[in-house]
Image 1 (cartoon, rainbow, N blue to C red):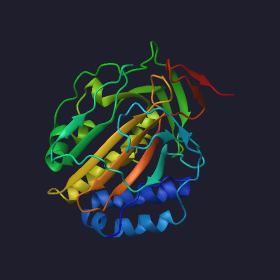
Image 2: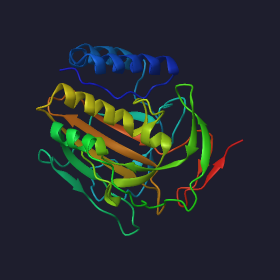
Image 3: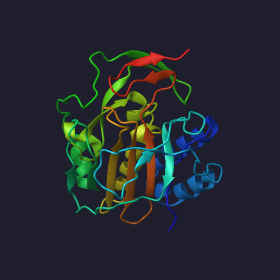
Length: 272
Protein backbone atom coordinates (compact mmCIF):
# COMPACT_ATOMS: atom_id res chain seq x y z
CA UNK A 1 0.00 0.00 0.00
CA UNK A 2 1.41 3.36 -1.01
CA UNK A 3 0.30 6.17 1.26
CA UNK A 4 -0.65 9.50 -0.18
CA UNK A 5 1.18 12.47 1.32
CA UNK A 6 0.03 16.03 1.84
CA UNK A 7 3.15 17.84 0.73
CA UNK A 8 4.73 20.97 2.11
CA UNK A 9 5.67 22.50 -1.24
CA UNK A 10 8.96 24.39 -1.40
CA UNK A 11 8.56 26.13 -4.70
CA UNK A 12 6.05 27.00 -7.36
CA UNK A 13 7.41 24.41 -9.78
CA UNK A 14 6.54 21.61 -7.40
CA UNK A 15 3.23 23.27 -6.52
CA UNK A 16 2.36 23.33 -10.21
CA UNK A 17 3.24 19.65 -10.57
CA UNK A 18 1.01 18.63 -7.69
CA UNK A 19 -1.78 20.91 -8.92
CA UNK A 20 -1.66 19.22 -12.30
CA UNK A 21 -1.79 15.80 -10.69
CA UNK A 22 -4.79 16.81 -8.59
CA UNK A 23 -6.65 18.14 -11.63
CA UNK A 24 -6.01 14.89 -13.51
CA UNK A 25 -7.07 12.79 -10.52
CA UNK A 26 -10.30 14.77 -10.21
CA UNK A 27 -11.16 14.23 -13.88
CA UNK A 28 -10.05 10.59 -13.93
CA UNK A 29 -10.87 8.78 -10.65
CA UNK A 30 -9.04 5.62 -11.74
CA UNK A 31 -5.84 7.67 -11.93
CA UNK A 32 -6.51 8.94 -8.42
CA UNK A 33 -6.52 5.36 -7.16
CA UNK A 34 -3.38 4.22 -8.97
CA UNK A 35 -1.04 6.75 -10.55
CA UNK A 36 -1.65 9.64 -8.17
CA UNK A 37 0.17 8.22 -5.16
CA UNK A 38 3.17 7.22 -7.26
CA UNK A 39 3.62 10.71 -8.70
CA UNK A 40 3.18 12.37 -5.32
CA UNK A 41 5.59 9.92 -3.70
CA UNK A 42 8.16 10.73 -6.38
CA UNK A 43 7.79 14.45 -5.72
CA UNK A 44 8.13 13.87 -1.98
CA UNK A 45 11.77 12.81 -2.40
CA UNK A 46 12.48 16.50 -3.03
CA UNK A 47 10.38 17.54 -0.04
CA UNK A 48 11.71 15.96 3.18
CA UNK A 49 10.03 16.57 6.51
CA UNK A 50 10.98 20.02 7.68
CA UNK A 51 13.32 20.39 10.64
CA UNK A 52 11.83 23.57 12.05
CA UNK A 53 12.09 24.21 15.77
CA UNK A 54 8.89 23.23 17.55
CA UNK A 55 7.60 25.60 20.22
CA UNK A 56 6.10 24.10 23.33
CA UNK A 57 2.69 25.55 24.15
CA UNK A 58 -0.26 24.93 26.40
CA UNK A 59 -2.67 23.46 23.90
CA UNK A 60 -6.34 24.13 24.49
CA UNK A 61 -6.93 20.47 23.71
CA UNK A 62 -7.21 18.19 26.75
CA UNK A 63 -5.79 15.18 24.94
CA UNK A 64 -2.25 14.36 26.06
CA UNK A 65 -1.72 12.23 22.96
CA UNK A 66 -2.03 15.16 20.58
CA UNK A 67 0.88 17.25 19.39
CA UNK A 68 1.60 19.95 21.97
CA UNK A 69 3.39 22.44 19.80
CA UNK A 70 3.60 24.32 16.56
CA UNK A 71 6.21 25.70 14.23
CA UNK A 72 6.43 29.23 12.90
CA UNK A 73 5.34 29.67 9.30
CA UNK A 74 8.21 29.79 6.81
CA UNK A 75 7.24 30.89 3.31
CA UNK A 76 10.16 29.07 1.69
CA UNK A 77 9.26 25.80 3.39
CA UNK A 78 5.46 26.05 3.21
CA UNK A 79 4.31 28.63 0.67
CA UNK A 80 0.85 27.04 0.66
CA UNK A 81 0.61 27.32 4.48
CA UNK A 82 0.74 23.54 5.00
CA UNK A 83 3.53 21.43 6.53
CA UNK A 84 3.72 17.65 6.46
CA UNK A 85 4.38 16.38 9.99
CA UNK A 86 4.25 12.61 9.50
CA UNK A 87 1.83 9.70 9.89
CA UNK A 88 -1.53 10.45 11.48
CA UNK A 89 -2.02 10.15 15.24
CA UNK A 90 -5.65 9.13 15.71
CA UNK A 91 -6.04 8.77 19.47
CA UNK A 92 -9.82 8.34 19.42
CA UNK A 93 -11.52 6.20 16.78
CA UNK A 94 -14.97 7.58 15.99
CA UNK A 95 -17.88 5.52 14.71
CA UNK A 96 -18.88 5.85 11.07
CA UNK A 97 -20.88 9.01 10.43
CA UNK A 98 -20.21 10.47 13.88
CA UNK A 99 -18.83 13.93 14.68
CA UNK A 100 -17.57 14.84 18.17
CA UNK A 101 -17.09 18.52 18.99
CA UNK A 102 -14.95 18.97 22.12
CA UNK A 103 -16.54 22.37 22.77
CA UNK A 104 -14.92 25.51 24.16
CA UNK A 105 -12.33 26.02 26.88
CA UNK A 106 -12.59 28.49 29.77
CA UNK A 107 -11.43 31.32 27.47
CA UNK A 108 -14.11 30.54 24.90
CA UNK A 109 -11.63 29.02 22.46
CA UNK A 110 -12.65 26.19 20.17
CA UNK A 111 -11.18 22.78 21.00
CA UNK A 112 -10.60 19.81 18.71
CA UNK A 113 -13.09 18.08 16.45
CA UNK A 114 -13.14 14.33 15.80
CA UNK A 115 -15.11 12.73 12.98
CA UNK A 116 -15.48 9.59 10.91
CA UNK A 117 -16.48 11.00 7.54
CA UNK A 118 -18.63 9.05 5.08
CA UNK A 119 -19.63 9.65 1.48
CA UNK A 120 -23.17 10.39 2.69
CA UNK A 121 -21.86 13.08 5.05
CA UNK A 122 -19.99 14.69 2.17
CA UNK A 123 -23.04 14.59 -0.11
CA UNK A 124 -25.28 16.08 2.57
CA UNK A 125 -22.80 18.78 3.50
CA UNK A 126 -22.28 19.86 -0.08
CA UNK A 127 -26.01 19.91 -0.81
CA UNK A 128 -27.29 21.88 2.16
CA UNK A 129 -27.30 25.67 2.41
CA UNK A 130 -24.72 27.36 4.59
CA UNK A 131 -26.05 28.41 7.98
CA UNK A 132 -25.35 31.70 9.72
CA UNK A 133 -22.05 31.57 11.59
CA UNK A 134 -21.23 32.99 15.03
CA UNK A 135 -17.95 34.77 15.73
CA UNK A 136 -15.24 32.44 17.09
CA UNK A 137 -12.83 33.56 19.79
CA UNK A 138 -10.52 36.39 18.75
CA UNK A 139 -12.81 37.65 16.00
CA UNK A 140 -11.72 41.28 15.47
CA UNK A 141 -13.93 44.31 15.92
CA UNK A 142 -12.79 45.40 12.47
CA UNK A 143 -11.75 42.82 9.91
CA UNK A 144 -8.87 44.45 8.00
CA UNK A 145 -8.78 44.59 4.23
CA UNK A 146 -5.51 43.24 2.84
CA UNK A 147 -3.67 42.53 -0.38
CA UNK A 148 -1.54 39.38 -0.20
CA UNK A 149 0.59 37.70 -2.84
CA UNK A 150 -0.14 33.98 -3.04
CA UNK A 151 2.00 30.98 -3.89
CA UNK A 152 0.44 30.55 -7.36
CA UNK A 153 1.36 34.09 -8.41
CA UNK A 154 -2.09 35.58 -7.90
CA UNK A 155 -3.13 38.16 -5.30
CA UNK A 156 -5.84 37.96 -2.68
CA UNK A 157 -7.65 41.25 -2.10
CA UNK A 158 -10.26 41.23 0.63
CA UNK A 159 -10.88 40.71 4.33
CA UNK A 160 -8.05 39.01 6.20
CA UNK A 161 -10.04 36.87 8.62
CA UNK A 162 -12.47 34.05 7.89
CA UNK A 163 -14.72 32.03 10.16
CA UNK A 164 -12.81 28.89 9.33
CA UNK A 165 -14.31 25.42 9.80
CA UNK A 166 -12.28 22.74 11.55
CA UNK A 167 -14.46 20.11 9.86
CA UNK A 168 -15.56 21.55 6.52
CA UNK A 169 -19.22 21.93 5.65
CA UNK A 170 -18.48 19.85 2.54
CA UNK A 171 -17.37 17.01 4.84
CA UNK A 172 -20.35 17.16 7.19
CA UNK A 173 -19.24 19.91 9.58
CA UNK A 174 -21.69 22.37 11.11
CA UNK A 175 -21.57 26.17 11.27
CA UNK A 176 -21.42 26.09 15.06
CA UNK A 177 -18.93 28.01 17.16
CA UNK A 178 -17.59 24.65 18.42
CA UNK A 179 -16.43 24.01 14.84
CA UNK A 180 -15.07 27.46 13.95
CA UNK A 181 -11.80 29.31 14.51
CA UNK A 182 -10.67 32.77 13.49
CA UNK A 183 -8.45 31.89 10.55
CA UNK A 184 -6.70 33.92 7.89
CA UNK A 185 -7.96 33.54 4.34
CA UNK A 186 -4.78 31.58 3.61
CA UNK A 187 -5.31 29.22 6.55
CA UNK A 188 -8.82 28.59 5.33
CA UNK A 189 -8.45 28.11 1.58
CA UNK A 190 -4.87 28.95 0.57
CA UNK A 191 -5.14 30.48 -2.90
CA UNK A 192 -8.67 29.05 -3.27
CA UNK A 193 -7.30 26.45 -5.69
CA UNK A 194 -7.54 23.35 -3.50
CA UNK A 195 -3.76 23.41 -3.03
CA UNK A 196 -3.32 25.26 0.26
CA UNK A 197 -4.63 25.79 3.76
CA UNK A 198 -7.38 23.59 5.17
CA UNK A 199 -8.73 23.28 1.62
CA UNK A 200 -5.76 21.09 0.63
CA UNK A 201 -6.78 18.41 3.12
CA UNK A 202 -10.49 18.82 2.41
CA UNK A 203 -9.99 18.45 -1.35
CA UNK A 204 -7.96 15.28 -0.90
CA UNK A 205 -10.61 13.76 1.40
CA UNK A 206 -13.44 14.61 -1.00
CA UNK A 207 -11.54 13.13 -3.95
CA UNK A 208 -10.87 9.93 -2.01
CA UNK A 209 -14.51 9.58 -0.91
CA UNK A 210 -15.71 10.08 -4.49
CA UNK A 211 -13.43 7.23 -5.56
CA UNK A 212 -14.32 5.08 -2.51
CA UNK A 213 -17.99 5.81 -1.63
CA UNK A 214 -18.19 2.86 0.76
CA UNK A 215 -15.07 3.90 2.67
CA UNK A 216 -14.63 6.12 5.73
CA UNK A 217 -12.12 8.75 6.86
CA UNK A 218 -10.98 9.24 10.45
CA UNK A 219 -10.39 12.97 10.92
CA UNK A 220 -9.10 15.10 13.79
CA UNK A 221 -8.54 18.87 13.71
CA UNK A 222 -6.84 20.45 16.73
CA UNK A 223 -6.33 24.22 17.06
CA UNK A 224 -3.06 25.11 18.80
CA UNK A 225 -2.96 28.26 20.91
CA UNK A 226 -0.01 29.97 22.56
CA UNK A 227 -0.64 30.95 26.18
CA UNK A 228 -3.98 32.71 26.56
CA UNK A 229 -4.12 34.06 23.01
CA UNK A 230 -7.61 33.91 21.57
CA UNK A 231 -6.63 33.02 17.99
CA UNK A 232 -4.86 29.77 17.18
CA UNK A 233 -1.37 29.81 15.67
CA UNK A 234 -1.90 26.58 13.73
CA UNK A 235 -4.38 23.77 13.24
CA UNK A 236 -2.99 20.24 13.42
CA UNK A 237 -5.01 17.94 11.14
CA UNK A 238 -4.85 14.14 11.25
CA UNK A 239 -6.44 12.13 8.44
CA UNK A 240 -6.56 8.37 7.89
CA UNK A 241 -8.68 6.64 5.26
CA UNK A 242 -10.12 3.20 5.91
CA UNK A 243 -7.73 1.66 3.35
CA UNK A 244 -4.69 3.56 4.66
CA UNK A 245 -4.15 5.31 1.31
CA UNK A 246 -4.14 8.65 3.13
CA UNK A 247 -2.45 8.50 6.54
CA UNK A 248 -0.99 11.89 7.40
CA UNK A 249 -0.67 14.57 10.04
CA UNK A 250 -0.23 18.10 8.74
CA UNK A 251 0.13 21.53 10.30
CA UNK A 252 -1.96 24.28 8.71
CA UNK A 253 -0.55 27.71 9.52
CA UNK A 254 -2.74 30.60 10.63
CA UNK A 255 -0.56 33.26 9.03
CA UNK A 256 -0.53 35.79 6.20
CA UNK A 257 2.39 36.83 4.02
CA UNK A 258 3.50 40.40 4.63
CA UNK A 259 1.58 40.90 7.87
CA UNK A 260 2.38 40.67 11.57
CA UNK A 261 -0.69 39.30 13.32
CA UNK A 262 -1.91 39.95 16.85
CA UNK A 263 -3.32 36.62 18.02
CA UNK A 264 -5.21 38.29 20.87
CA UNK A 265 -7.10 40.96 18.95
CA UNK A 266 -6.88 39.99 15.28
CA UNK A 267 -5.09 43.22 14.36
CA UNK A 268 -2.72 43.00 11.40
CA UNK A 269 0.29 45.25 10.79
CA UNK A 270 1.74 45.38 7.28
CA UNK A 271 5.46 44.59 7.27
CA UNK A 272 7.76 46.94 5.40
